[in-house]
Structure formats: structure tokens, C-alpha cells
Amino acid sequence: MQVISFLGNIMKEIEKMRQGKLYNPFLLEENSWKKIRQTLKEFNQSDYWIDSKPLEKLRGYFRQSYPDLALIPPFYCDHGKNISIGRHFQGNTGIVILDEAPVTIGDHVFMGPNVSLYTAIHPFSSAIRNKDLELARPIVIEDSVWIAGNVVINGGVTIKKGSVIGSGSVVTRDIPESVFAAGNPCRVIREIDEKEEAVWQQLYKEYIHG
Image (tube, rainbow, N blue to C red; front, side, top):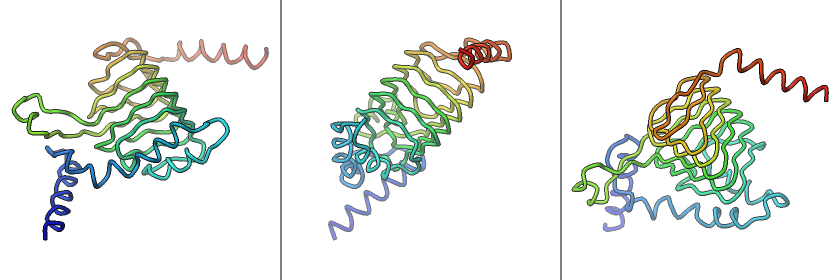
């Protein structure tokens, strides 16, 4: 009966987490967190450029990913099963994804080194926080976004397609489509408009024609 009661408590906490309500993360440890630890260790100690098997094993934990995913170790996540990654993702070294809530990453997303995505949110009330309770909010990164190095993205944020997040930014609110945003807190600096597009198209022509 104690085992049934314990498993029931775990399922209740998982449901609270999925609903965006307060939950106790310590009751989830046996159920989810430990499953991926050995695989993360193997991947982070692997010879990434020679042996692709550890990455393929890690991909098996994700809700969605594609064979053209590039991810340079070390990498850390809490569960893996809440992470969805689109086509042609390129992730540099040191990425951290705390995926208590769903993390959805679109196609052609680039992440620089030491990018951190935190879905977990601790209560501002110390009285509630000290009861080991937290909640989680999803993160969405749409297609063709570039996130430069040392960026932190907090729970509840959506970064719309085509935008660029500057190095060292802390993203605490939604970022609109096709803008360059940077800072702490991250804010829109300018639109990525036709004039900017023309500059890069010219550089591309010079590249093609040598």
C-alpha cells in the first residue's frame, strides 16, 4: 500500500507540473530525473566528432529531434522527454535546458555556447519557496532564430521566427518576429528589415563569386 501511495503522489506532482501549478520537484526525482543521467554522462565524455552513437542515444530521450541535429558536448537537461527540436538544429558547447515544462525549438535554430533555458520558476514568496515547491512555464523558440553565446531564456518566453538574440542577454519576455534583441533584460534593438537583408545578400554574392 505504501508503494501504491508513493506512486500516486508522484503522478499527482507530475500532473501539477504539466498544468503549470506548484509542484514538488523532489517527488519527481525517482520517476524521471535519474533515467537520463547515465546517457548524459556518456554523451558528455564522448569523442563527438568521431563517435555519433552517444548523441543518437541521447536523441532517443527527446520528444522530437532529427538526424541532422548537431550538438557539441557538454550538454545538460533534466528530463529530455519535454524537449522538441526541429530540423537542422546547431547547438554549441555548454547548452543547459531545464525542461520541467515543454521546450519547443523550431527548424534552423542556432545556439551559441553556454545558452541556458530555464522553464522552472521558484516562488517569490520565501515562505512558499522554502516548502520546496516550484512551478514551470514552457519555452518556445520558433524557426530560424539565432541565439548567441551566454544567453539565458526564462520560462514562459516565446522567441518569434527570424530573430537574433545578442550575447549575454537575459530574455524575460516574448521577442517579436525578425528583430535583433539584446540586453538584461533583453529588449528589441532594431528590426531585421529589407535594408539589413540586402547587406547580407550582397555579402553572400561576394562569397559565391569569390
